[in-house]
Image (cartoon, rainbow, N blue to C red; front, side, top):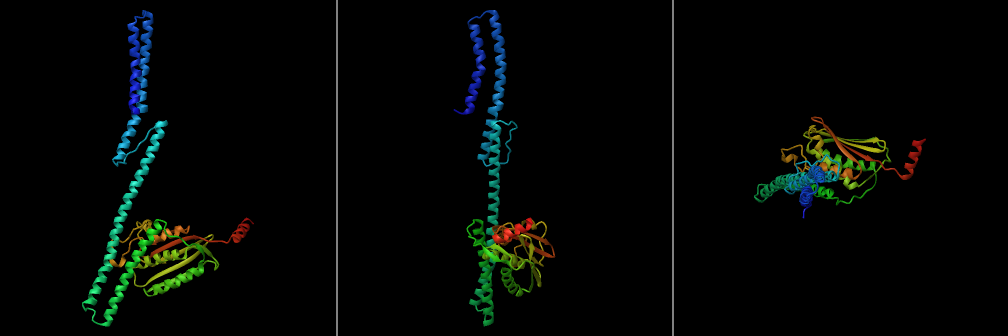
Length: 359
């Protein structure tokens, strides 16, 4: 038997008791004085019972009905309501717990909707960004097969273009694989002590060789002490830097660009800046550029393809290193990506530093 039914039966019994008492008094013909007393008592009991019934209804039955209605709404998938109770009693606590559960369910449902939308967008992006190079590869292969490339020079040119397009597809698939592994924490980081100066000198050499071929000038400034050390996974850190450079090249929008790389000393932290001379990012887009699949360019032309997850990978890698990443930008001037990474101190040096600070 349901609790609400039991409460209703108990309430009905309480309500009937005065009438039963009155009937018994009349039945046994009590003396007039006693009968008057009994009648007054019965009136009082009826009044108290009526108040008790109202109290039981509003304190127990009504809240139960409200909870039941809320549960039915959740069962139907309707989470757009609010369950509140002003009284601070047991039901008030139940209502609060129920409301917290509803909010969590709604948040989960909204996250799922957003995730599904992002997945649909990702599939659309992948379809577009794979279709473009595949179509090009097919066209150049057919050109070789049909004899359109009728000289060794043309054949060599077609093969180079095919090679470039396959590299584009491989880069896209690599980005997706890495992001998936980072998102599910399936990439084991190999953290080690890294001399920042030596590491970035090698990085800048590689970046300079790559950007020279694209008519992009590279400048490098290092204000750190030569013995500055950080704890990092060199491979994953290099991946983050590569994504930043690739993203800058993609949206450079100029024939002769510039990339400034700066290492700044900020006490216990290393501040790294990658400043490009690209077209910049609109203020409305800047807060979202590290969101997965977010693209400031919605036209999706072939020169600016990509999955839209390059900077998301950057953020995940830097945060996995205990650092943070952000961006500043001015339209028409360029964009700067900033890293902040904590320095590493040997234990004995840390003790000396603390001693010097206290003195």
